[in-house]
Length: 143
Image (cartoon, rainbow, N blue to C red):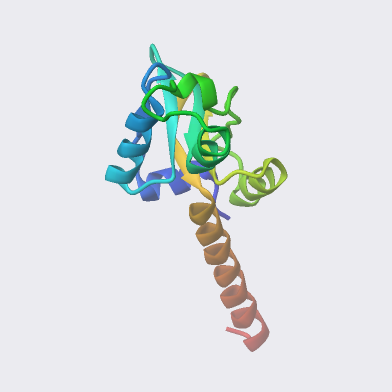
């Protein structure tokens, strides 16, 4: 069964972030350049929040704010919900479903290890299920 640490090891631990003082425009531009839907917000080496496309749509566009004048700190999701690397993919999916978000920072003893997305976790759960099915088929067939 996949745990979060295993998923991070497979996908890599790139940390894409912005500072809370940056403008929303710069954050959205960074997300577009990287092809990602969320960035971690890091100030002085500490994770202080998350900024996502959902934050942009709901807290900037719908509220009529100007993205070139609004600081990320005004619209980011904070405090960030995180997950421990020993948690399972299923636990991560349950947390994402309960909290209704798609990106989850991985933190161990105040150290940021990376980020997992809902896609990463779904793929891990599917891999786990396929392995279990193969094991059961071997058992049933006597191999």
